[in-house]
Amino acid sequence: MFRRLLSLEEARDAIQSQIKTGALGVEEIPLLEAADRVLAEDIVAMLDIPPFDRSTVDGYAVRAEDTFGAEDNRPVTLKICGTVPIGELPSIRVLKNEAAEIVTGAPIAKGADAVVMVEHTERKLDCVHVFSAVAKHANVMKTGGDIRKGETVLKRERLLGSREIGVLAALGINKLKVYRIPRVAVLSTGPEITEPGKKLPPGKIYDINAYSLSTAVLESGGKPIYLGVFQDDLAELQTALKHALDSSDMVVTSGGVSVGPKDIIPKALISLRTARLILSGIAIKPGKPTTAAVVGDKLVFSLPGHPTSALLVFHLLVRPAIQMMAGRKPEEDTETEAIAAARMFSAKGRKTFVMVALKLDESHRILAKPVSGGDSGAITTLAKADGFVEIPENVQFIDAGEEVVVRLFGPKMWRP
Image (cartoon, rainbow, N blue to C red; front, side, top):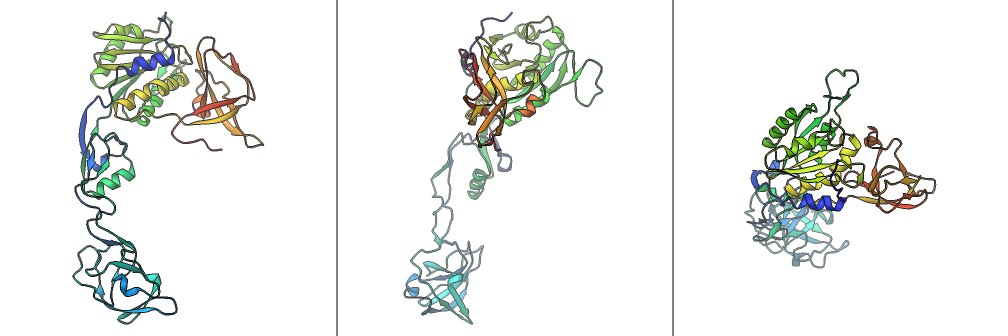
């Protein structure tokens, strides 16, 4: 039997008390491998960006004062003194009433302090007619105009994406320190489970959980280590758990945690040396039999065997733990308001999560319809549901037509 069922909030607190942000330490990696990793150091610019005054347009580098008074019907004529090369410092100097041809990104020629856009000029042999005056520094990005030397450009604990990688490359950085990501061992238990790719014997089903949970580990910022399927045998599970703990920073199992005679994962866990059970049962539906322990300094999550139940509990408890270990801030679920399309019942005394699919009605209201067969054992629930509605412990049901908040699966907003 389960010990006292913890509330979801108590379960979260019990788990988070075991985790320190960035607990796995730091490693230095190449810049091209840093996408979706978390910075473990402040990045301070060691040079100005750009490192020289540069043109932001194609046109002519000029002395701004030489263009004053230029109009469409009365252009200013300047002598072309040369062309500014891109990729090297210019050797020419722009004198009074002169202009130098220049392209976007090229350094500003000596003597020039502005650039006239080519659209506002007309070239005639070795002269250029300017039809629009420019102010000093017009179309010029000054040295350090983007980033100043000594400026803190990126803060520690920043999640790195394409924009951040671009900034780091602009600073000439090709290696940087990031938090290590947790290696998460994933294994399934049960005599009815067969690995995909093998022939399916009578009475068995293919292993869903190890694949969906391994992918969820990736989506959470961890590295999954798939260990396979194991039978409900105490000695075999003890060996499997020891191997999982030796090869990873966290372990996630599915199956074998209810109250039946074959549900022996809790027994296998507590038999391990230094194991300490931190929760055994949560007052939620689905997911009540969830178990978690600390073995040494490593967390072990034992999730229910039903696919929807396992993935929901992963979303609620395991994902935030992986994100914290990887130095990330746990992501908040995206939410949307909707109208209940049918009555949704709760489990007495337990917080209930109802899987729903979203659609628009004729009035363009968002409807939340409970997924058909939406109990924890229905496999298609995983594909059909857009998110879930949370019903508090003290609410018996949500009636059709009531407003509800739907917490969406995945980082993107739902679109009709």
